Structures are given as structure tokens and as C-alpha cells.
Image 1: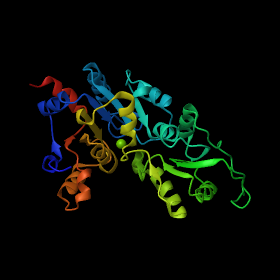
Image 2: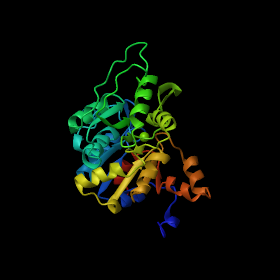
Image 3: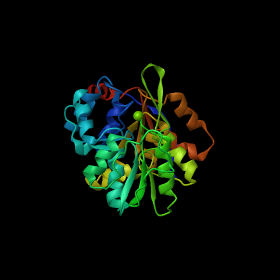
Image 4: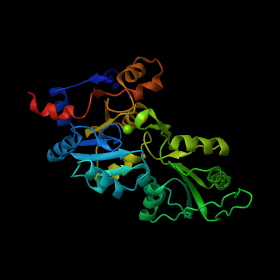
Length: 309
Ligand SMILES: [Mg+2]
């Protein structure tokens, strides 16, 4: 976007600067993990921030690449962690948006073969999108003798803790048909766990299938624009009046940039200030969209901002 480049820049804001920014926005989009909670622990002050924004009449939405649970389970999680006024319609997960895409955009005529978990299956079922029921592969079964469903017209890959070689092999067979759609819930490479451990993300499983098929998946989750289009189509959200808040530069901040939203990095999750500064100082033009407009230590800073003149 010509003209906007000079204003880009990791601006650390606090107090009245935060208040002025929020006053100028009608819609706030939050990533979840690393922003409003870390695993099963709410970021201190985050429930109060969400309530405050809603009391101020702002549209608040939650945009998560996590496809492991259906939206109704998210409502329970919000409630469990002290977010008492969040409703299902405000939650946009990559599993839900993948189901919307298959139903409303791709209008897939046939079944979906899923590499993924309960969150993906439940959202497809709720959206009325037909899929191949999760199979329990027979021990010792191989791609030579396993059944393939002739009605499959799409393969959807998401986070799958039961990922197997046989699932990968079946997906490869389906994708030999050039008419068969190839979708990924999200591109996340890995996720932090407690105790310094990590788990591979959907993106790593998608990469395996992309290599094996020599095809590229259509990605539904951030940084692709589709999740914002979902929100915009349901709530009439104006990008110019929206702020995207995330903890990961390569997904959340790039998503905001791709959708024409102002972006804010919060330092309670994956990405840190030095990485943002590194992208800002980079000469590569394609790195500029990883640079957040604003940075805060935590969204709890929003609470303080209300009390200051
Ligand atoms: Mg996150």
C-alpha cells in the first residue's frame, strides 16, 4: 500500500495512546493463544479487557488458527477461564471457517477426506458438509489394500494427533485427481507447550502432503484473508475501523496486513520485540507486512489506559 509504509513501525504504545487508538476503532479482533490466554491460563486482566470493550459497544471477535475444538467447546473454555460474555458467533476458528469455505465458497459436490481431529469433524457436521467418517485403520493395513471412497472431492488437512502414514497415503491417492480440492486449516509450523516442549502444527502435516503430491494447499486460516471475509460477511465489519491483535508476526500480523487492518503485537506469546524490529529493519519488501503497527507488553495495558488522562 503506497503511502502507508512510513507509518509502519513497531510503535510501543501505552496509556492515552492506547485509549486514542481504541477510541478510533469499532472492531477488535483477537488471536487467542498467547494473547488472551496461554494454554489453560488466562492472561491476567484479559477477561476484563474483553468485557470493557464490549461494554463500550465494540464488536469483539476471536480469530484462531487452532482447529482442535469445535466452537461450542471454545465457549466452554472462554467461560472456564473467566470470559463470561463471549458467544459462539464471535468465535472464528480455522475449523469453522474451513467448513464455511467448503459449503459456501467451494460448494463441494461430494465428500471431504479429513486429516484432523474432533474440531474439524464437528464443524463439518454442523455445516452439513459430507465427509468420510473417521476410520480406525486396521493394524498392518497398507495403501495396497485399504478402501478408498470414490465420492471424495476434497482433502482437508488440520492438526491431527493421530496422523499416520496410511492417512497421508490415502490423501495422496485422492489428490491424484486434479479436480479434488486440497485445503489446509492453517499453516502453523509448531506450537509451544508447557515446560519448553513443542508440538508440530497443521502446517507441518500439510507440507508432507504438498511434497508428496507436488500440489499446494489452499490455506483457510491466518494469514489468508478468508477468516476476515467470514467475519465481514456475517457482521459487516469495516477493515479501516478494525484492529487485529496477535502474538505471532508471521500469521496474526501478516493476516492483519493482508486484510487492510491496523495491527498490534502483544508480547505475551510467541513473537518478541527483537523479531519485529528485525523485520522492520530488513531490506526485503515482503518482510514489511510482518511489522506490527503497534506493540504492547500485554493487552492488560488496555485497563490502565482507561484511567489515564
Ligand atoms: Mg497465538
